[in-house]
Amino acid sequence: MESTEIIQEDIVLPLGFKVWGIHCGIKKFKKDLGLIYSEKKANASAVFTTNKVKAAPVLLSMKNIKNNEIQAVIVNSGNANACTGTKGYSDAVSMAEKTAQILNLKSEDVFVCSTGVIGVPLPIEKILNGIESLAKNHNFENNDLVSFAQAIMTTDTFPKIYSTQVVIGGKKITLTGVAKGSGMIHPNMATMLSFILTDANISKSALNKALKQTVDDSFNLITVDGDTSTNDTVLILANKQANNQEIIEDSHEYKLFQKALYEVVESLAKKIVIDGEGATKFFEVQVKNAKTKEDAKLISRSIAKSNLVKTAIHGEDANWGRVLAAAGYSGGNFDPDKVDVWFQSCLGKIQPCQDGHFIEFNEINAKEILSEKELKIIVDLKDGEENAKSWGCDLTSKYVEINGGYRT
Image (tube, one colour):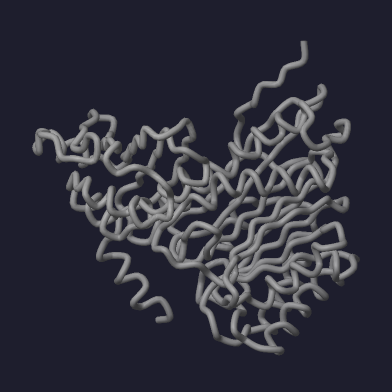
């Protein structure tokens, strides 16, 4: 019988992909330019920021992905190339054209991303020289996934990479994701870039559906600070090099692929929250037994986003009232007089609220439970059968320090 188990192995690149990252001079010392190259054209799907103010590379990449397969991705960090007018768009086009030139591609086959400070002109000559250097120094023979992950970082404190493999139709398929993000993180995308590479042979329509479904249940359910950026992008490339039979929508093989994809994006989403600017605690909000899935999502996201909940978590305070208040303004439907609330960590679980009202609990025990770095807030609406999860982090004075001096 065919194995359909997801295989956990070390970080590995899917067949036919090459990646690098270098320092080109946007930042003083750290890597700031990354390149992904697929030896064969790849089916591509992407999700972009919902912010009305969209960076130049977002506008260009939205255009390039519409009718074309993608074969290369060029990414710079340290400058968002957002709110930079026609010159900014021209610079994004130049990045695509230069990348296409050195790889012998069409510029429409190149996906462009930028991340960093908004409203500052892009140092385009440094980037164009860097693109040439990527080709010259690496000769397209070596791979360095970690250097690429470092090259797309801004205020991140560690590179975010995750890889998994799954057997579909007797073929081993690899999915590997790289992400950046630490601040300006809020549901419906944020200052977050994520690139997922796979050697699967999957139809464009199936790829689009799989990405949208997994993003809705992962990246769109995280929040660090409630801000939504101009540049956020999630891109998946599938170059068919695993030689499996084409995966089509809603097939058994599609479900296996989607499960593996969700594993990758959920891991990356959690890594982003764990690395939230100044964060010391990571928490998961579980909303149970809602009338509809949308109600559950609205309520879980609202609780995870609440600055008062975040500061209570930081202060190790079992302030269930803030949880209930955040649920109340979420837009989700529920009966406040039915709600139960728990706080949980590896040290135990405590319930301060039953049927929407305070119940006696041990404050010392609660403080001990909330002293852990990873926590859960569990909210049972007792209104239906739908559930949802969101992820957030605490809000600290370090966050203000980091963002107060970001440009300096």
